[in-house]
Image 1 (cartoon, one colour):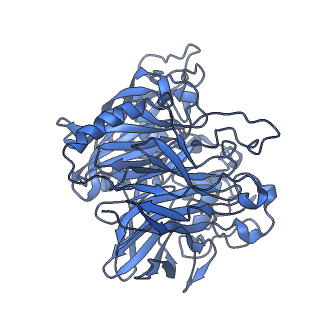
Image 2 (cartoon, helix red, strand yellow):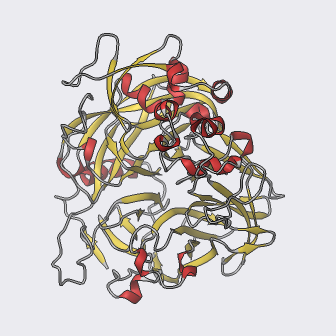
Image 3 (cartoon, rainbow, N blue to C red):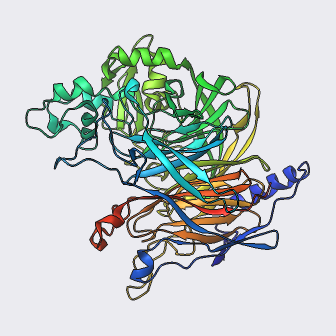
Length: 598
């Protein structure tokens, strides 16, 4: 089940090899040799309905039995809680249009947090309103099996609720670091003249405040009275105590974008933030104090392209967006600040230019001519982070920027780009009004990038990304109509639309999870050996689902785990394949338990 990635596919391997050799000269331990038993690519209807996972892993020559283990499925009742039940600001169940309680099937990131003598999981539900649940787990000391004991909703009423929490990470100080993806376009919401002009994607959030967004009596003014766009779009940190209490904090200091996830580096200060969508940026936050993300400097990347082969290669500059802290930004939000309080707007000219005094940018919201109002630099940097970054000269042309992980042995950061398209191409339409920094061939199957990390005295961090280069490239493919693989447009032995990634520290293994539709009919989790540049398929998921939350835990009481969540089965594609409604429930579980290797 392994496939060698050719040198032609992966220019970045040469860069990685040089980095690895240098790091290896100072490394005290050789990486453990890890090989997963591969799984077949689903071709039958029966296989496409199952969760297929590696049945064994070989570590340093010794075989260990493993598999996929389910902890909870959405809707499961554990203790007094119902896993995935959405709650409003008063702790009452959120209702669907038909009056039923809304149980989310959009489980995404789920962390494992050993706290004192107990073990907890904090789980996201990528909905509107969003939800997080804290679940106490028991762990079998001998087998490592995890079992849910209780689960309860985490209260976000102090922040006006939680919005579309997507991926996440665990900080070096053992807190859950979540996210809020796809925040509302505040400009459009402010100017809307009726509910018909409010995006359908945004309307369900009103339910958190007890407002029915679909009722004829609900006006746009009613909607705006409860929905403040600038409350949403930030990294979210959750700390858990041994008694099971969970405290959330939204880090307004880190900027407002479509946060896929935030990932803290080993210095406990430098954090990378991925921005999901079309024409987005890539961000780095450097905190004032270690283990405290409430204040610091924010930076946005500028891509300086060197060549366009195998996902491209670029040197990176970091544009300083300034300093801020949580409280000052939250105060501005709760004062009722709007888009027009921050910017003046002018219509772009046909040639893509702007009138004098206005800056031409092209971001997720399209081509705009903006002028910052006096004294609004700090507020703009955190509430309109992507637009402000573009105005300052950063690159906002990335497409579907997803997971982040780090291999400390080689000082390599990895970032998944789900597809190379639109702003990442040399695209006249998508680049109009912008600098057109990224000029790559289209790759609908995506690329996982490597970034070399080093010190930057000016920024004041030892963990600054210097470059960006393709490491693992998906391969577009057309299969014959009579082929077993006819429903796939990416090579079935390669990645398709990489999403979340995690590095198995102490090994050569990079784990890559997919969020794909037509690329692969059934989403895959891969183990990529960075030494041999080979891929092994280690899990596939049922029709219409997405792999989320692959995250490696190297040692929890003598056992290692690879978390794996299966989101919305039969919900993204192949909806017509659903036979039993119960099978639409999402899975939260893990591959393993695995042996501890370091």
